[in-house]
Image (cartoon, rainbow, N blue to C red):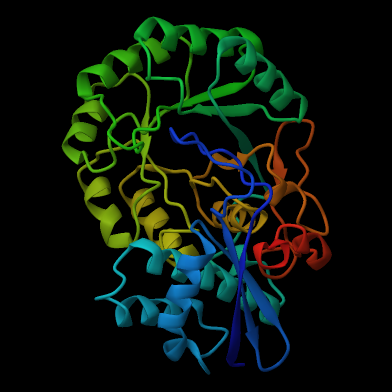
Length: 375
């Protein structure tokens, strides 16, 4: 079975604000689908956490390497793309595009084999996992309303991130965290994401250490992106002294970039994003490397239905997995599949067991979010 075409589908109309100072409008394009088609009529779907224009440019670069390639050898083909685009890629948008292609090839591989991707990744350690609803911080009253709504949707774990946390003063940060704990009670897991990958992040280890001690008083599960993403020395020190687990890794691409963070124990929790770091092939390698270093892996997923499906398949195939990230509310997750994701009464998601990623994109629904058809 050979690759004959790649369709690039930029998503627009329901983009969720990511917390950056300039904000994001619904019509902005931050996520892009790719559909890899074959000479036997089957196709596979993947998702990239980058804009359609960048994916289109990368696919133009990569297409001579992909045309006519095997559609059922995801690891070899994606590694060929990575190695062959070394001087023009090596991370960044080319790697983001390779990520979506790799996910699509795993989806295809599963469909051809009649198996869920998790089984092809090595086997199923679990049938369900707890999703955490991923939301932004806000003013106390608005935050309280968002938290109540998120719990009503069935989430029993919630991560709060970015503005205005860490942007005013310590007293206000504690007010936000205290409001959150009071609102959801002791039975809901809470995580905090400072958003240290924001441009010109002003805080260092001292701020992060003191903030971590405050978070511990409220039973926070982990403290994410407390420092700029290149400050590995700062993370090493913070992880050593923090009373709560430290998490980061969402901006890293390629398994080689993750190695020093794991070997030097710079984190308690590593967070690869398979829609940008090289796909499921790279994420699987990163996850096993983390396991071998006794470091927890939790996929990052400011995501789409395809990204979430890929994260679920990876989580099923890893010996140790506790959570998946679930951006909520988000039409790119909740309104694009023929069957919606459902959270059970205990706050868990069933991991799809159908062939491939286990989800099917509704092409009619997709038309409403296809930037090419909305322009």
